[in-house]
Image (cartoon, rainbow, N blue to C red; front, side, top):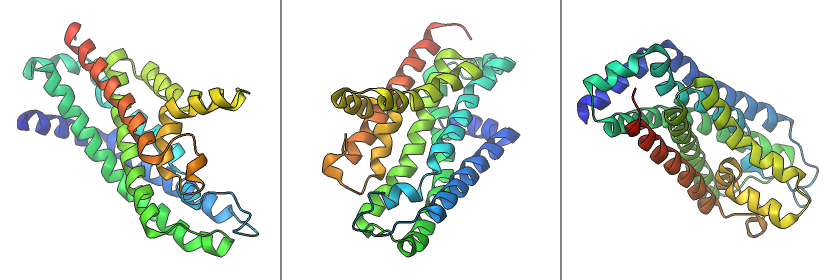
Length: 251
């Protein structure tokens, strides 16, 4: 396993797009979060329904898309160039190859997530109280911070699983973005509140980002850690299906 991990890490760090995409995760997350944080104002904290934690981390909506692209390219690039044949010839245990790719992708995304999330939270802590919002206590914000980093890691695993199944970069990216954004779009247009709530509970993005909720938790569609668990189930299912497809077909 050690040799497989080393090989996958070597491939990942020597591809120029990897570092550009990791930089994109950080830059887009921090910049959008800063923009929204600075522009959000509330006349009275007592009447303001906005969640300061979510405002501070608005950039994750863009950052997760770059994470998805990064994770998809981690395997689909090898299919497009034919390099996957060399990889599987050198390391014929396909499940181990996918596990190593998942570990490398997750590690890179978690590091980028830490670099992106911590400044975003710090900016929110510094700016939002002056704009009329009460920033959450340390306990809930620790959950939000750690959970948001884990959220990005799980998005990476979900994307890697999808890409392993379909091989093609454009198709895989389209599927990942659809999984993330179609559920909240459909829920917005559904008039029945019960169905709307169910869609928010099962959607990978809407459920996963519940980890950022700090306001009116009892009335949210799903609790924070349960929501992150739903996203983890999506990621595990995608990886399992990807592993089965990888084992059954030729490279």
